[in-house]
Structure formats: C-alpha cells, structure tokens
Image 1: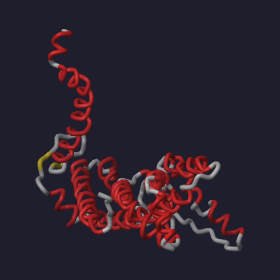
Image 2 (image 1 turned 90 degrees about the horizontal axis):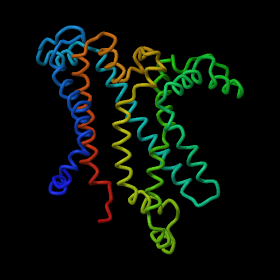
Image 3 (image 1 turned 180 degrees about the vertical axis):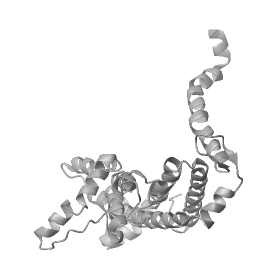
Image 4 (image 1 turned 90 degrees about the vertical axis):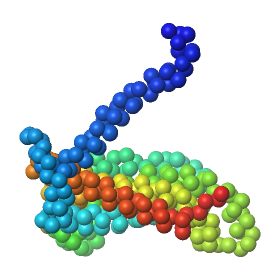
Length: 297
C-alpha cells in the first residue's frame, strides 16, 4: 500500500480533496441544477413537478405586479445603502489609520455591528428603536419634537430604516479599507507635502487612486450582499414587506412565493432572474472599472 502511494502521490491529494468535491456536488451543484429545472415546472413541494416551459418567467413580468414593486424596492435599497456604507467605512478607516493609543479597541468596536447586524436580535432591537414608542421618538421629545409616528410603519420612512441598518454594518468594509490604507507608501504623502499638496489634494490624488482596487472589491461584495438581504426586512416588517410593500425586498417576496404559497417552481424562476440581474450589474461594474480603477503595474 505504501509503495503504491509513493508511486502515485497524486492519489493522496485526491483522497484529501474528496470530501470537499462530494460536498460541493451534493450541496452546491445539485441544488443549482435542481433550481434551474424547477424554474420550468409547476411544483408545490408535495406533488410531482409538472413541466410548464417558460410560463413562470412569462407570468413574472405580465401578471405579477408585486415583482416590479419588489424590484423597485430592492434596487433603491442597494443603490442607496451600498454607496453610503462604503463612504462611511472609508471615512472611519481613515480616522482609525493612525498609530494612537487604544485605536485597536475602537477598530473592534466599529467592527462589532458587522458581526451582529444581520441577526434576528438586532432586527428586533431596530424595530423597537423606530417604533411609535421607540427610542428615536423619545430622543426627539427631549429636544422638543413630540411625535408618535412609527418610522417603520410609515410608508415614506420604512425603507430608510432598513437602509440605516445596512449602513450601520460598515465594519467589514472598514477593515478592508484599513488594510488598503496601510499598504499606501508613506513616501507618496511625503513627496506630495514637499510639493505643497494639502489634505484634500492628497486624498483625491493619492488615497483614492491607490485604494481604487479595494473600492472595486468592496463595491462588488456589498452590492451582491445588498441584493441578498432578507432577515432585517422579514423581522422589521413582520414578514409582510409592509407598509404598502415599501420594504418588500425581492428576497422576501421570493420567500413568500416559495414557503408561504408553496410555488417552488415560480420561486426558482425568481431566483434565476435575480442571479441574472446581479450578474449584469456586476459585469457593468467590471466593464466600467477600467475608467476609475488604478493599478500600479
């Protein structure tokens, strides 16, 4: 046996990666292919799937008004929360990119919301803060503004509370920006100071160009994460996506179709449309990156 393994050392490698390959095929490839098949069927989880061709896709854009509503809400959520989160993450990273005493503690504190921000507990806390008797109204009362509005239940502000919760979780992007800032050579800033450049000029001419690959990475990562947001919308709106569909994110509506109405075929079609949308937006970001991303080499 030992002589066989010595003569075929690649077999040992195959044995070590076999658990990963089996797990990948069972828990990733099989569900993906199954979802693609179900998207062309009428399937309720209890009976045998019935082939319906492109009927689910046709129904999405001709009969289902909630699809358009959920897409509008999701796009507004992503295109608002992602830039705001990246801007705040970059500003905080620059503030923490100093060799001051105790700065490591501040980095941990600012990163903490990213660890717990998407949890059920934080979503419930968020719902209490922005409720009609919540912390926000109590703070407004202290400065003389008395209101009993439920910021979560009011259509004009409901989505804003979700966006604020998303922006609050800027810790992971901040750490990546911080790593990027530490890789910018100090000699660049020293040379700029000799030329008389101020902080603003240094930021736009040195910091932003040198960080542009990191910005691209964070932008793609957070955009995909934004499209997949589910838990906060489900908890804050009591699973309904209200009021009047103003927090009905696409993922939440997909969940309704799959596990409330048991339309697994239709939900699978929705998932593939979402994948297509994310793919197109990611491709656009990559294609436009050549105009604003700077690579030293």
